[in-house]
Image (tube, rainbow, N blue to C red; front, side):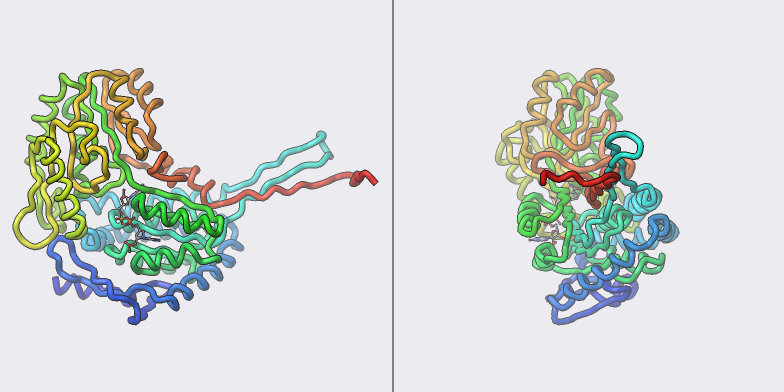
Length: 491
Ligand code: NDP
């Protein structure tokens, strides 16, 4: 770990105007490797002076960036994507150390997913156009519209996907001509710093993508600053309420990517192995720390026993261990606090009568480990079926028919995602039409290609990330009326 520490400790806690910045007056942030609990880096929360520097430099850079031809902006973003791909191995190791997620995952889901976003938005930066509306035929008055950047955007990230979240926010924002100040979660402060370095290396103006690390108060200071035109948060619903309310003070744009309690519905005609694979991916990938996870697994009555038996059997094969070992499939939780929160839900599940079929305990030794946990016999009113746990806890609920399961799947305040497994495609399309969720999968789960919009309904959020839809959330339209004749007036 000594060597890790030497390579991991960043040159400064923040990256502003093209350089690492340090201000030790800020509260200490101890960055721990979740697999061992060891401190691998020490950073300092941004002071008001650091926040001011970040906002002022981003404001300057935005003017320079917006003045570039869109095709030149796109080229820079695509260069960032190329560097991310070239350095995927080193960035994946950093992501693993920052989050504890297994290297098997980070090699395919983090820098590479970020690169997809930068490539996608870099590719369409030059295709952002307005419209023309003609009145009175050729030679008559007309209106043209200009799609303009919003200005200065603030991105605030959760801890589960620090590289991906930063890229999913920065790529569309910058493609539209905005600048971004990004604040990572205080428990995963390392990856976004590396991304900021890469932006400068790829030719982005200094200050275009600044990173300030810090606790929630730093995020709060950023979102209330009058220079900020847009706030994009990935986080929990309680934080979302605060950030949304703060942005409302200045009537600012927001994107809110918040929590979920998503249903995964498995009919008895579904392919058993595929359904089990999906349930595993939907609950245990990233040790269950994924917002869109299908944690309420509704299984049709005749399928409950074969599904449960096979799920338990296959989950016993999960390999918990060193996240840097390519064979490891389950890493630790991000922090001990998060693990204790999950263990508390496991206790509540048992107290409320759910059947603990597997896991629920912590392996011995240091680090924040918890075994993949499966509950059977869960009913809708139980706490574990209602609240977001954000850990590796899967609940099996049985159902009898389509109408019943649709109503039960929708009986939640959340609406991030949903999945349906069935061989009957008419039923699959009928169900997804009725499900209250921003993203639905048919016979798959948790795949989020950059080409597809991603975001929630109900308490799970506002706005969409990825796809062309994200461009609407990082730009605004100006209407220009052009008169071609004389001006009429009543007197
Ligand atoms: P939190 O809501 O605790 O924190 C999110 C971010 O907001 C952190 O950077 C946090 O800083 C910051 N923050 C906290 N308070 C404020 C404030 N008052 N003003 C501005 N910023 C603030 O989320 P977690 O990090 O615990 O992440 C887990 C949550 O994120 C889950 O609910 C999960 O579902 C959701 N999520 C949603 C996704 C989506 O796309 N819909 C994807 C991934 C996760 P600090 O950490 O320093 O307190």
